[in-house]
Length: 284
Image (cartoon, rainbow, N blue to C red; front, side):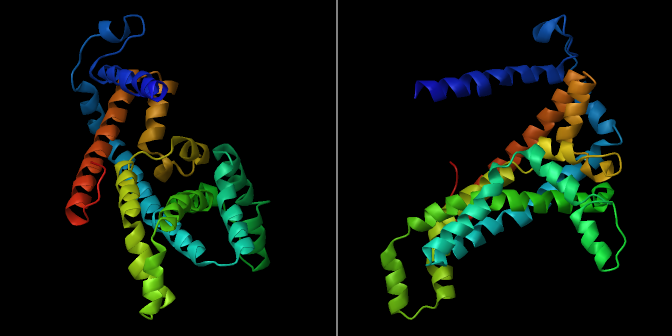
């Protein structure tokens, strides 16, 4: 266990000390510990900024949209795959649903841009056949969230279902036999055997998902951004990158990132407590 423990200590716990720059006016020459202390100044500057609440709102809306859509679909896919008895068909479906997960984010976004191109994209070509005018979907702020979430569903759902399939494989077969003897239909077996059997896994994944509610993937959002959709695509993670790396305002961006992490921690603790009270399943 020495190697994994060392990894977490070196790359996860030791860097936490660097968050102190959120309370300092960090200067590269003076270093982290030599830079002057400014307290909560950077947090105050962020919340006084007119764009702060827009960033929080965009991040929250996109995160909730992704959670509501992405969380139940792997469960439904796993339940459906568990009911398939034809081995060849089952393996084929698994292969086609798992494969997109191994495509890089850059390639996925490139595919989206090509498919949705207003002049040469397949979507607009089909729309033209039926008499609809071509539209710049990637430049439409109202379409950004849907494009982001549903492309993510296509890429992630098959792989996310693996956990639930493993949980379904661990259910005692005698429960299915008893349900059949009692005359339970397939839907009734799913509702009374499958779902209760994987409920601990469902709750753990839900807790982790809510705990990462404000921690959207930076790369995909940043790659999908353009000047036309910034009103909905600018989120806390991309803002931190632009302020910290591009504008070299390290202390301010660290303060924004720390605020985001604290919100995630509060959500994680609250949902874990709620799950423990309601279902008896929790992370701790």
